[in-house]
Image 1: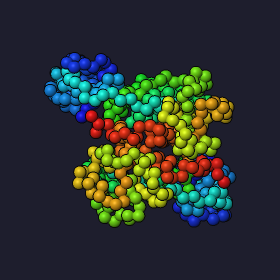
Image 2: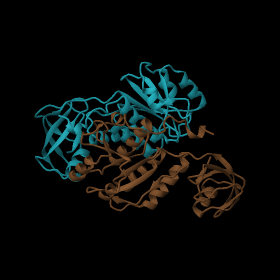
Image 3: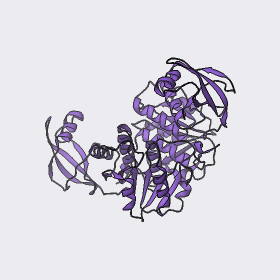
Length: 247
Length: 247
């Protein structure tokens, strides 16, 4: 079943003219016809059934029918990550979305190589991944921020899980054993690691949870994905059934 | 520090002529000179220091010095996976290696789209990833095997963790809570899922542990990576320090 993200108010019998990329996708890629059924969601009102009211090579309008799934939030987990080169960036955005991240924050550190981040492209990545993975929400993508600014305005009630390559952290599952299901974020450094002064400053913050992720060196993108996975399994929503099985 | 995999006997003072790809890499990519130090490993005898004895644009010889790290095995975890298209295959091989997989087995199922698997390329992928992630072992890459043959010769003392999209499995951490640190494998189905008869057959086997991985749909490559990650955190070696910190 095709699922499209439409950032509009959804209500029964509303007729919606699709943007041309979505019209092209339905008409020319998926070869949909008038009357065909698809699913739509707006990120906050669950999932809705819709029918194609009219379709041509360049235009498509939908009639919204009724709501078929209630809204469900993802766990309140953010990923703060030092941007890497383009392909891994798209990869991180896609996989983090599948794994259920709520917010992505590109963080510029002393050793961050890539200073320009195409956040519009990241937003397109997370929307596409959300459409495909049965999410009813879209992860928020923030503009890049310097590490020092991120920390200076940090809400200390949100614990920050620091993927600590120095060996100073407890093993991930041990470090999270005493955490309640509350709000958390994950912080992944750049390929070259944090600068020494950044690292010392991080370790001083009361909201930091340094964690170890085993004996092997993980690339930054692998570490991001692995840290989200473990969180979802230990504190997130992995005790829930696959969503397509739910009413 | 550059680390090279050399599948030869390592002993002090041995002089080794490198294959031309490795000579090219050291001379022209890394611009190494006579006397420069690198690290080498053969997958079974730990890590050794070596010096460049002679180097030109096309040839390079090394003098092996002494052993600097003792051999360490990875956890005895295999990944049995239905091959997907080429890019995700290289991705699975690389990430699975970083995460510590011991063996990769491509499995052909009823719904597997890709029937040809370039295992030579997969072996090159896992060697490159091993060199970069401080592993002292190289994952084994098996030739593709049909699911029915894999199961008919399965050693039932190795439990098979089935990533179960049907909602029939317990949550991952619950399903693994009673497992001892013993030998396991992970089985990931193809993009289209297992055929119904395959799935029913799998669920009948006494060595199967069906696990659930949350409400969102994971792509096959994400599921493979996430399943290995959780295993390493829960039953693997994530209580160990980063290896580059170890003697």
